[in-house]
Length: 465
Image (cartoon, rainbow, N blue to C red; front, side, top):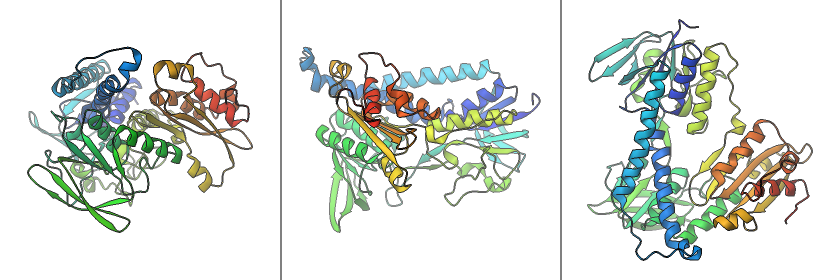
């Protein structure tokens, strides 16, 4: 395998992780991406910059709402958006430089440019400096990622109608903002600008926000966001829109009633779609699914023996860490190792305040699949560390099989949810039981004790409830 040449198309979390792992296993690797910096959407305009802004806005909101109760007195609190944006950009720059180092360390060839197939075995890369480059690799991995979905009647202009790419780069706090889409992206960016002072209205066509989460999690988030000042309009369709010089007006319909909503900016966050346009897949003969994603088998191989695909361009949730796992798996498969991904153990997180995190089945899915289960819940309100940290909002919900006690799902609402879910994901991966959690010592005082308490409740032996 050491003589095999692998071309990785796309340098996001899936692509660059696959490239590194493949190089470690002895393949000669070339990675191509149209951006000047590595990291794809996630690092450059997605996961990382949005989390930087979420942290900054959370600090501001906490200072404004909670400092007084901690005995911290502030005389004048202001938002300096340009400085906030510079901090975000510095974080991105530091991480992209780190990826440059990793490419050099692992002897991975980097090419900046747009890749497109000429045939199943030939890929052309359009490079501004070097001209067109043709590569004939032994193996090809497509990890092209995804782009924001536009509404036909409301195209992005980067000014009044913005995507998530624009939403992380605003240089001032808009007076008001409408957010079309109540999923993770819409809720996270809506939260950022709401905390900083914008009047934010979230419009969701489904009957609840965060629809992929457990129903109780969705309800808790809705209650919290409304308390924070966001307006949430569920079961509401956007029929049309008018973009003026200084505002956007949406024509909405809810329960048969039509209304208008006018805001200074409209963030469209209705989902993402695979970034396949530039690849010229027809030239390679690559087959797509009905959902216009690349069809792969259980080893991530397309209908062609030498071409593989991972991440947002194949079926499954569009999550950076899902793409990473697939990248590792496919690199190991190409090297003759048994690469595998347990999709049931992949967590999902919404990084608002409070955060929501989930792994495994929701209660609604268990009911739909007629699986017998027990429920254990515990609130953070009586948790000593949560009280000390002023982070008492939220709960842990543990779902375990009624007969075997096998852990089926864990759902957390808390400002620490994104970190706490890692323990739950590990336990799901190893087919642990609720009793396994309950019998495992958790340091005191910690937020993680609430997970243990929820597990105790699931086996009918709550200690503090």
